[in-house]
Image (tube, rainbow, N blue to C red; front, side, top):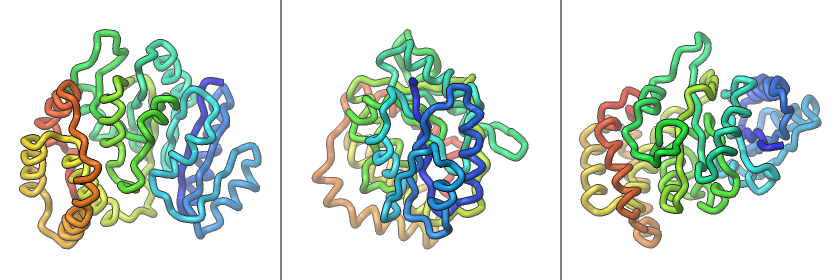
Length: 295
C-alpha cells in the first residue's frame, strides 16, 4: 500500500462519519488513521463502533493541526493523504497524487483542486494555485507552490518528518506556511495537481474569530521566523495596512507580540532561492480574494 488517509477531528461527529464512509469508496482500501482532538460529542466512540477497521488515536487535549504529527508517527506507508472532517477526496484522487510522488522523488507535497460543496464550485484559492508564479525545476508535474493546504494535500511521510511536521506553537491557522518553507529549504518541492480533486463542505461548527486570530498571529510569526529583515518589514506593513480594525485583529497582534521572544530565539532566515520563491507570491497574496483576514 502506498498511502494512508489521515483525518483530524474535534466535535464534528456527523460530518466526520460521513467523511469516513467515503474512505471506503477508495479502490485501494488504504489504511485510515483518525486523531480525535479531545472531542466532547461522542465522536471517538462513534468511530470505534462504526469503523472498527480504522486506527483511532485519542488525544487527551486539543492539539489543533499538530494532531497530524501524531498521526504521522503511526503512518507506515510512503505517503499520507491529509483529509479534514469536512473534506473528502474523489475515489481516484489519492492514487493520482501517489503516482506523482512515485514518479518524482524530490516532490514532497501534492495539493489538489478543491471544489466547495454543495454545488461543486471551485474554491477561490484554486486559480492562485493553478497560476502560481513560484519557480520550480523543469521536472515538476504541475505548478510549483510556495505553500499548501493540508486538508487537500498528500505528503511524502519521510519529508514531512524530516522537516519536523507542523510547529506546535502555531497550533492551527495557516500552519502550513512554516512547514512549506522548511521543506523547500531542505530541497523538497511542492506542486498543484489539477486532476487530484478534493471536496470541501465547510462545517457550520466553526470558530471563525478564533481561526482568524490565529491566522493573523501565525502569519506574523512565520514572517519574522523565516523572512529576511526587508521582506519581514514589507510583509508586516502590508498586513497592518489591510487588516480589519477590530477586536479580533487587536487580540491577534497582542498574541503575536507576546511571542516575540520565542520568535527571536527560533529565527532562521531562508536561503536566497527559497526567499525568491516567496517574494514572487507577494503580489498575488495582496490581490487575493481567498486570503482576506475576515471572519
